[in-house]
Image 1: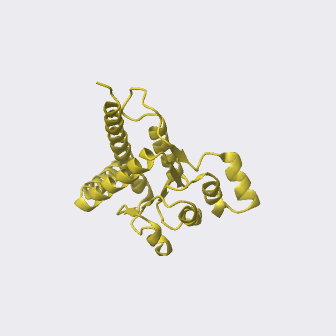
Image 2: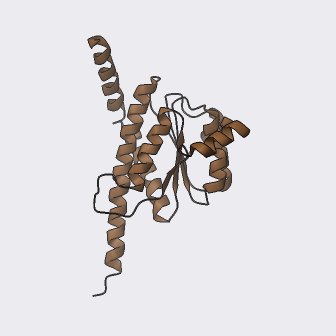
Image 3: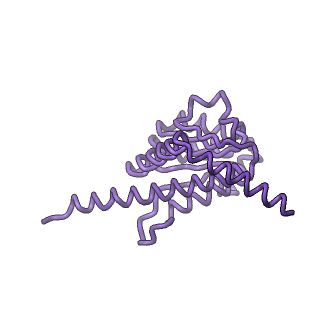
Length: 207
């Protein structure tokens, strides 16, 4: 048991250390910038993934929509996970195909300028690739994919503004790293939007 615990901790430490590379830090900054721009112009961030990735999407979306580290009653940010409507998802899965559980929602809900964040440890989930197809058709907003070491499927690489490929083939370690990255993104977005709001308020102050 000790060996298993030590190996898991060591593997995660090595993976987190690799995320400190300048290329990976720059990708985090790039994604945060896209999120900030999307929200600042009044658009919405949509998230989707399967299994544990779905849970992570819901978690991070909630951090934005409610609050993360700034507890001052700030307005909620426009963030929606496509993973929560069980009635709709089961209807689509039963009557059409599970491959379309996200894409049909995206076609109904996304508007021009919205952002899509997909999370897929394999990078090949058919419902993830389908929703990327749909997002390209209905919105000119950014698409970001968080994946394992293989990256997003080669057929869809050109659709990604950023494909953050976490260098591991171990699904739990990938999901743990993604959650850390997601929390960093939430913190950046929340702080930077607060600064922008404060500047807007100062600009409207009558002296």
